[in-house]
Length: 596
Image (cartoon, rainbow, N blue to C red; front, side):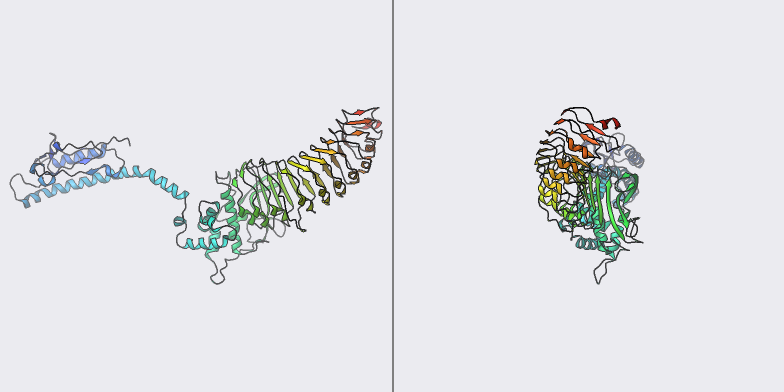
């Protein structure tokens, strides 16, 4: 392969070219015409030719079929230098016919050996020269399926039928473009997916409908079109989130012979919401008793779950098509550092969606939450926590319907910014609102007191300013109220003393002033009270009425006077007390002697 090639010329020992000699070139130096003189000697020509051709075969180094080829001898009009023509002249004066007769057998032998030499050389050289090329071409062909390669004949008909079905959720331009996740997904549907191919090839010629599924899904029904769409969406999810590199584990995704309910692997570990049993991938449950189904052969499917709460290196954005998985009950993605982009606005089409959990994902994942997500009537839980993205936000405007069932909204440690939007107070079924450890700012809106069902309200660790709204005293079911670590100012609102169900109140690390309202004596269920690091003053006599109090943190204020003698007298639990850096006087209460 370095340009060093060896060739031989059949000829006599004295350097003269024998009559009928064959000159072979294998990238030899330019031939010298002065050496092309012929000899009439015939007796040993065949033997010498055979030997030299064999040496050529044994020693030639070549890489392509043009490296060994016959070279015609130049014709210059001189009878003694006239190449092959001179070889046909008889030296003894015989006539032309006799000369030809005597020469024919020799030419046949020479031609035979030439063909053998060329064939063997090509057999060696051509595979060497083509091997790398053919391997690369095969790899390229596998990596890039064009319309011509993937969609010939009947398959092209399937493609057009699939495109007509899938155009309801995807632009036809994306389907035609084989470089997009959508283009790859539809080609998998029509070229490789045996289940979809079976449906597409058995379209009813009269109605135009595909065959029905065995039992189908509760929301999506049993139409064959629904299954093609469902498998296409999951394939698009796979291709869209493996654009840089493949998933660590496919979890049976794109298994052409498996029902999509079987696109998962079972793990045994503690993981919400499955406890010890954790099917990672796509799993389904039946309508009867909630058993995991691998297909719909025996029972209709109640719902499916997309659960990839395991480090599987999903990379790229969630495609908009995922919003059309109407039978998806839970979408859970965790610990994927290369996920990108926001949640698709199309998620408002997921009529069966009950919970969304997005945890511990990467720095390029996030954005404004889709407004349509908060309009889903069946949605119960949104849990977005510990993601590294810096551009999370709530939508400014949402038309919240009366039928909205959202009960749990947890947006914890995600760098959410902006104000609490007014529409949030219209989520009448909301029981848990946790916006802690973000960058929310501005005043806490008075309308938050309209959350009549809320039990857990955590706004700690943000940049809220202004006064604590007195409307918080209207929350009849509240059990936990955490407003700590903000920049709140003013007094503790007296109406908070009306919250008889309140068990934890944390307003620590703010800029609050004044005294503890006397109405706090009504907080008979209160167990944990955190007032530390503010500018409170006055006495703490009101605390004596809190018979269930077990944790009291008042450090770094200006409280004064004696601690009430009956403080903690009503509890037998362990007690945590930190009252340092204040101006208390007198002795410790006698009840302290009985505390553990």
